[in-house]
Image (cartoon, rainbow, N blue to C red; front, side):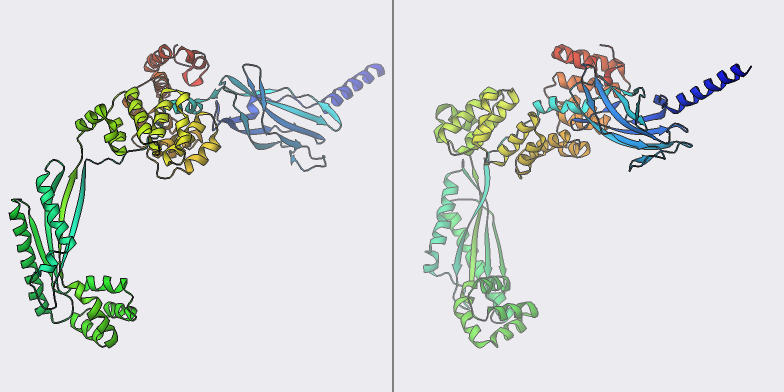
Length: 552
């Protein structure tokens, strides 16, 4: 009987020692991972782990380090950030977990993404009780990675590089002015004034416009007559009106001589205070600051004039240098120059492109449909105008669209252009160097087509809302991807439908979109089309969690 009691007591003591020398297993119920499945973001896989140590789990002398692991299907293992916890009797600075009530914790971690969305996330543990190492079994807490954001590496391949634009305008508005000066208190046209250079050029241009209807077209002739602000208003009003009438009559006579029909718009200003202020401001008159102050302080014309006359020395300078310039009529021809038509430019390019300006040649490229025809035009531009960098950039832009690396040197040749800087950034983005891409694109202020390239950069950086805003009304694979990642599915559907040259990536994005919207039948059709266009997508699609419910 005594032996039996001793054995029982020994067994109970052994059981107690065993339970005190171990830390039990943890289960998936003790952990929540967000997001689950995991999801890539800017080349990494972030995760937030909310864990719980149950009551009476963390022995008072225990130290447990939680080690997140991402285990890829190909055998590669990537560790994330770790966190260490300790029992109540351990001397240390880690988070203390109560033995009696347990404890909760949050651990944020990231993993490198290894271009494989088939992976499992485990939590492993490095634990000890006192000085003794103990084993806690690993726990699987998440399954798979949604890697749709990484598809930017495919969509950027079909992004439009920035084209350096031409400045060709077939119709350009121009004007030419002539000035006729009058003597004080007079309104007669002096022969000497009608022979001045500006008036003679005015007459010659009227005749030139009349003789060359193909390249020049007149809108109207403006006659603006003025009187200087010295003297009474009634006198100046009559004088300015007379100057308008004689000037208008002169213009009509010149038009009649050449049998030209053109509207003449005439007006007059009785006291030209605005012109007075401009001339005084541009002069070196000693008291001009005082005069300008008077103009700002006094609004009544008579009081202005009297205050200025009180500055006797200044008024003599005004009477000699400023006021005579205000007694005038200004004649203005508003006309248009008409450049070559599209047909004329293409015809001239075919016969002798050297007779075209650089703007006309660059414009000619926009009239061509095929990339090869555009290349011929741009190559011609580099031969005739080798110092203009735009054609070099545009050749490389076509090369980017074609995947022809041999043509990409043009970006470096034209690297001073904002478009070339933007394109070098796009090239860096294609090569996976986001930091370099950001530097180059930031230096491309004012580049034509910059918004779309910025959209691709923000897409790569994970700024999906900003990327969608950058793309605006652009219909491209990248724009659709940004909308999908921003969960703007209705807009993404429209974008994908309006892409001019849909490819395998377009169809693959459509499959993901329909799968997210629960339309598995259309998703299957889109995926089938994508794989037919690019069979190399099949292995990726087979492990894509987004398409797990889509038949392949």
